[in-house]
Image (cartoon, rainbow, N blue to C red; front, side, top):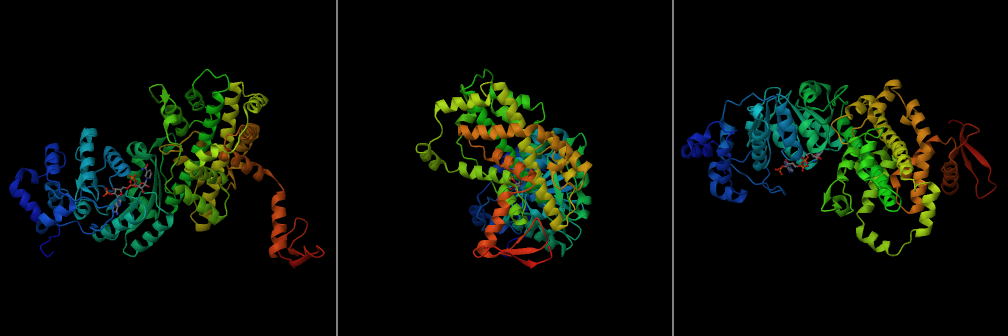
Length: 580
Ligand SMILES: NC(=O)c1ccc[n+]([C@@H]2O[C@H](COP(=O)([O-])OP(=O)(O)OC[C@H]3O[C@@H](n4cnc5c(N)ncnc54)[C@H](OP(=O)(O)O)[C@@H]3O)[C@@H](O)[C@H]2O)c1
């Protein structure tokens, strides 16, 4: 092991002797890239054969379960030994899978010099190759590195590094190596879907070394990362000040500015992204349920058009959004004469941010029933075998009943059905966003983050998956009343809900009678009705039950204080305390 050198110069020298021309600047030569690939060796082979000559970048986990391949090449050695790249890059990016690679290209395209590094070197090659193909006008703006140390050395001080690796322990692993090369005043920005408390833990640990740390939600998937995502950075404001020029340029641009803002301190950036994803789950589920109704009824009613046209039409109105737009596109994709969507296995996946949102809401006592229904619907969809088996045993309704229900609701008139569904979807969407925003407000209060909900709605207007015209109305609502307790209280939403609530009731009841599952629509309706009910009789009874079996006490509507009743005796009410 003592034959290892720190930056691999022995191997560099070896290759330099063999192929002097290749050891000079290398980044944009495809010939070199091909040669590099021919030199590629698996990790074990490399260890066994060229161990005496190379160094594996410090912190590289040989025991990683991901078993990365290690390719030590002329390019790599050039990168580690070249002085010309030192202190030249505006920012560095680690993690070149889907999101990182696209974000790096976006940064370079906006005129910043970006250095990139990935644990497995082939992804660095892919990024360089793609950059050469796609961004001929930006040559020199992106440099790839195969050693973390030289990657860091290439950055201007104070160094700014964005990490786009898998959330959780991979982020810890990356930081534990990276921090060895950083200095006080440098900044790490984690752009992954990270649990906000992990961000806070890391920020605290790094602050003792003077290193700044931010957790930044990035939304918009591959395309957003490449052409303009919605960015939700949270952490110390000094950290934001170091990168806001870059983030403002790479974010999606909408009529009222870039889709990025300083979210707030601590893990607030990750938190807001988490809730964004929760809302996204609900938005998708609501659209899915409406699609199910349309699809089912289009087979039995008189509908001459195509389903995609309905979504296309909706996309020109209040429901305009990315999700409605892509639904319309999806419903046009055919294989031979069949829609691709009809061939897709009906099991929806999830990655964790939806679950976190539910857990957080439960922890903070905030009802987000529509988001929760959406996650449950995904879990239920995965019970495919059970569903197939039960579909043969449990009954729905018969054809005669079905026709009666359709005529009762007037849905033989397909245009009428479409207009009811549009209103129902809009009302449910308001309820779903009200739930998400209420959770953000509660977290902001609990954590003293002082989040600006109007500004958050604004930065979701472009770049992200839930981008929609509707977000402008949310932004305006918070502008009118910054301390709005619930979006349902905003005068414009009150008007919209009053206009659409009958349609939502009819759609939920009609679909239920027809046996079409609408858990998110139904939960939105119940949320709406629960929120607008002055007295919730069910809660009165629950308090009585709790006091009956557990002496949990209750408060009264007609007088102050806390009471317990002798339920199983004479029923008399005993004041426990007079204070409320
Ligand atoms: N995909 C999306 O649409 C999307 C949207 C928004 C946010 N995000 C978030 O953005 C982040 C990146 O997402 P992604 O889909 O591009 O990639 P990903 O599949 O989540 O992660 C792959 C990246 O993580 C690295 N990695 C994995 N384990 C590692 C370890 N132990 N040590 C060091 N590096 C490790 C991989 O390096 P190797 O190549 O060496 O394996 C690769 O660069 C994630 O947090 C994700 O949740 C994703």
